[in-house]
Image 1 (cartoon, rainbow, N blue to C red):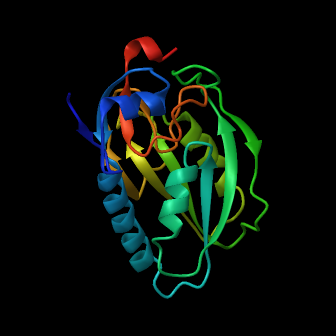
Image 2 (tube, one colour; image 1 turned 90 degrees about the horizontal axis):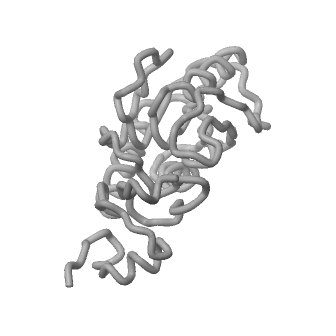
Length: 199
C-alpha cells in the first residue's frame, strides 16, 4: 500500500478516500507542512513590510481564502484588523465565467488605510481586477495583494501580487479552502483534482 505524506502524520490512501468521499485526486501538490512553512514566511514578510505603520486591514476574498487568511493573520506579528469581500466568477463549474459578481463588501472603514487583499489563487485575473477597481475607489493609503497561489496565466492583471505563496501548476487545484462547487475545501493539503471529478 502506497502512503502519501501530507502533513497530518502520514495519510494512507484509505484516509484520503475518506476525506474526499471516494473521489480521486491526481496528486498532492503542496503538503500541509509545506503550506504552514510558507504561510509563516509570508507573515514574517508582511510584518517587516508594515513596520512603523499603525493601521493595517487584511481583507479576505471569500470563500477560497478563508483558511489561508486565518492562518496568515496569526503569523503577522503586529496589530491587524480583518474583514471580507465576497465575489463569484465560477458558479458551480471549474472554469471562470469571466463575469465577476460582488456579493458582499467590507463593513470596516477603508479610506486612508493600508489594506492587504488576501486571495486564494490568481487564475484568470478577472476577479482580482474587479476587486482592485472597487477598492481603489475608496481612497486607500496603500493596497497590496497576498495570494496563496499564482498560476501566471493572466494576461492583463491590473496589479501583481506583492506576496505569493507558491507558483502553481495549471491543474485544477483543491483543498486548503479551494473547491469545485464547495467540495474539498476542508482538505489540509492542496491537491490536483482528477479530470473526471472536475464537473
